[in-house]
Length: 217
Ligand SMILES: [Zn+2]
Image 1 (cartoon, rainbow, N blue to C red):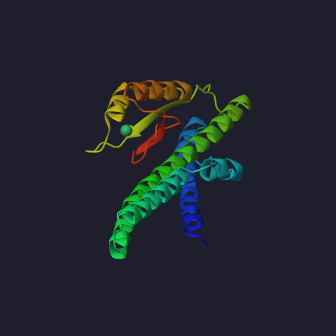
Image 2 (image 1 turned 60 degrees about the vertical axis):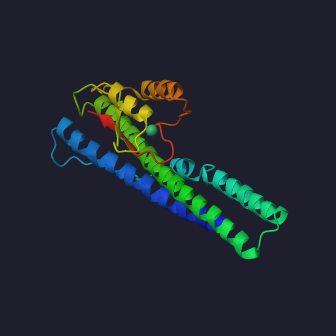
Image 3 (image 1 turned 135 degrees about the vertical axis):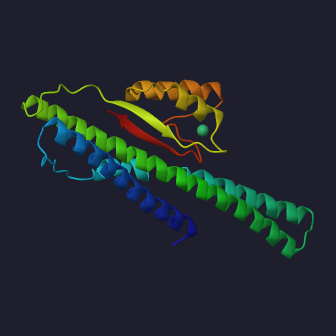
């Protein structure tokens, strides 16, 4: 198996675990709320756990790692071309190539982490969506009296020295009551644009950003 395939397999496997973890934690939180709403302490919804198809979409989509391989290849080719042009010694060329790989490996780790956090957030959202559908069904059956409200979400941004201005601003602009998923996406895109970033997805991820999506109860 080539190195590229191995990397992709490893990241996919971790992303799948992260997706499942996200799904389970979301469902667990929501089950506790449903127990309260149904006034039944034993109430437990049976979950046909992770929707394989949705998980595949979230974790097997064309990953950012493709950029990694393209950029590594290009840089390595450049080092070789330069070494040839400047008639560098082989040890010097190898050293230069190693430095390209080290740098790129660090980038890959960062991208893999981003992929995994993203998968976990997608899993959480899938979990929330399932519970939401179930809540509506229970309401329709008269098993809960509280009319289901439109789901609102917030983003929990990890603060640290690396937290960018866009995320700092974002964390301060989400109201305490949360936003609908559409509004949350709009806010992310508009703040991102002001900071010169192209941000998409459900949880405004860019490399190395740790952000968790959560439903506001
Ligand atoms: Zn950021």
